[in-house]
Image (cartoon, rainbow, N blue to C red; front, side, top):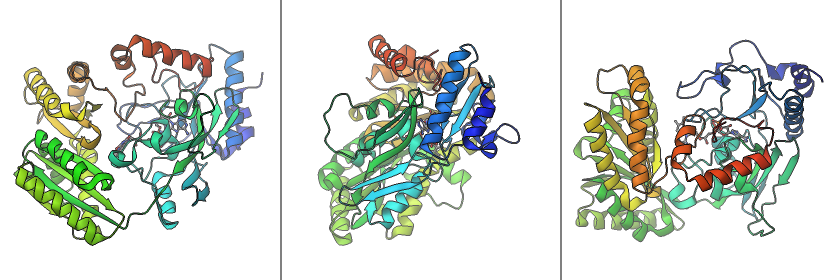
Length: 477
Ligand SMILES: Cc1cc2nc3c(=O)[nH]c(=O)nc-3n(C[C@H](O)[C@H](O)[C@H](O)COP(=O)(O)OP(=O)(O)OC[C@H]3O[C@@H](n4cnc5c(N)ncnc54)[C@H](O)[C@@H]3O)c2cc1C
């Protein structure tokens, strides 16, 4: 049996098997929750190289079943649940897909884009735009996250209310299986009922079933106009009412609907002083709405104004501004997208990306706020998110002046239990978009139905019997 590292060097070249120097970009997670220790960071440039690496690791694992050799696929390493960094064993290979970064094809007639896993999301948006199309997946990490990571985590983001998650945008995948075989499913077909739809197993599997090496994604024609509005609402119930009005007035034109709590916006104002946050002191919540219109800007503006007039007269909006130009619109989105960064500036915090039925959001927040306030004096709640999808980032920050790291260490299990029990009581999900990674493995085991967990284990066993792909993530070992 050949030793593993020389074999990996023979596949990708010495320069692309990293074992020394500063590897923190690959070994530390974005939230600074974990610092792993890899056997090596391996950087293939082609699907064939990925296949040879996986084959080599699977063969090594077969010969040395107790070696712990396994593979952690990694894209931009912006995941928030410690799923893309190695554990501390020194036995895991970080398989960085960043060198697989070709856009293979834009097919205008089929309205599809086929690209490799390591393409940066923002690059794909730009390439689609240059060709006259919209690639609508959009999230605050788009400057560094990758297509493979987006699909591996079934990313959501700010346009889900219109376009759905990464899953809904994907028409086909190319995957290297846990055995090192290449499955080419890049058909780009919109209709294909030939048995089980394998693509959906790999999407959202967080690197535990195989390595996504390329994908065919849906494009749409660019809208003629895109307008953004910022509204203050007197309560979350009013925000839900506004959402209903927005669906009614804008139909498919409603492409964004984000809610932001006052404390979340105060952190942006405090940590990013150059950003002028509008109206945030006037109401407990602000809402960011986006209207994409296929006719014209005047048409978009007229529809937006009709919506806001109806909302003002119903009392579900107390004040509103519509961005006058693209620069103003971008600034409003920048404020929204700066919330996670402002929160990180404020200190370590306990993050949740939960979902409950939209109609239950006000009651969920009221009940859970009260439970947390009763349990932790002075607790600070950073509440914002994709209300249009029933998905809230319901985050918990240490009381003012407290030691954030000590708070996290001491109170996280209790806080998680309060929040997740409440989510379960309201019929929701403990993860709407970030996934399970290693941070929520225990919670998944507790909150998911035993039948669903059993089916998930059967799928893992069938596709990766050697447990070579990202072990310990999603499912407990
Ligand atoms: C500021 C900020 C804002 C964010 N906002 C959102 C948001 O609005 N919505 C949202 O859904 N997420 C959000 N995220 C989380 C994160 O950006 C997304 O999950 C993103 O899709 C991850 O992409 P990545 O390339 O960084 O993947 P990584 O972090 O590298 O990996 C994520 C997971 O996918 C697996 N993976 C990576 N590449 C592959 C591959 N080629 N094949 C198989 N598995 C793979 C990894 O093993 C890991 O389990 C945000 C993160 C940050 C830092």
